[in-house]
Image 1 (tube, rainbow, N blue to C red):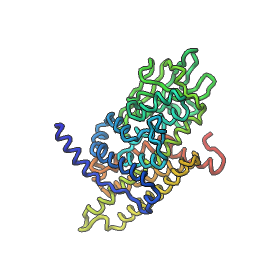
Image 2 (cartoon, one colour):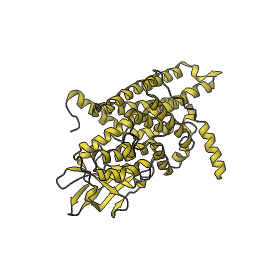
Image 3 (spheres, rainbow, N blue to C red):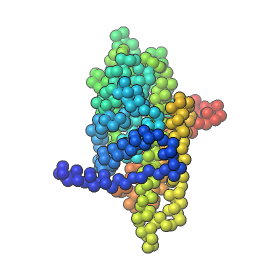
Image 4 (cartoon, helix red, strand yellow):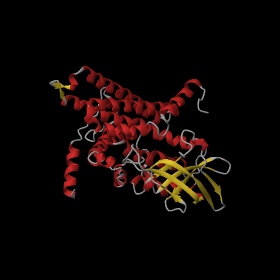
Length: 405
């Protein structure tokens, strides 16, 4: 395909993105004008820079590295980080809306953005030294550098405290050994925030830079999910990490868990963006598809499906908005964030499946977004706390009895 032809095809696909956001309970009344402006700018970005290309990227398992700089340009990286470090200085409702709009385009694209902001920039800002903030945050915010977060290991997922990745004090540097798995952004990352145990078994965060001897990032191939996102491993073979790369502000498992709370909050909003996209496509298709001489939207079962979709989206929108207000006030608990993440992803998965049925056989093709969202959400329901673990986090909050310790 020639460049001109490719551009024309992209323009045609972009014009096909007719997404209209559902707002049945007038939740927009709860948003400021700035919130709406931010949401609108990200929605326009998605329609121009993601929608025309996402099906091809996913079909070809291609991560469009050029999107990183574009995300930086529109302020999608670290929107709540103060402006003095390159962030947006925005509130948590704004952050949620940004994630919602990006995941409406694709979960893999949102993963790229939320890992950068919540799992790389957030710990450097929250737990890093002033020198670390000034060195890393502006380049991460602008998209000049891409980052990743290393917590999950091959044998330790839901139980991160069992990690075996470790570092030793060698006097003038630390010696890091171990491996991390299922790491978004890792094959292209310039910087990794890695969690490892010291010689006393205490968990600390270290900043590892690409190019350090013994540090490699093998890519994970053969994914059926998040195909436009790059995923890989982090392997540390006697990596010499400068002592100034240790995050000094906090140690213990609570530090990476705080990062995950921030990321899970973004997922709660993002997954509903995917749900909205599936619902909007099903609503539109139900009025266009004629069977038995009338639109399928006239049939009771289709109306039932659409009604249930809209109800669940509306409930999740209200839950996310309230959570955003609590995040802004510093009152949101881990259990509350877990409830929202689990609810949003389950809602989105159910809506994707029902929307696919409304589209019939066409629903499995790249002409419509449901199968792509459905496959992506099968990762989202697992990463950063599985569906079942989030239920147990909430169960422990309810009963006071942890079920997984």
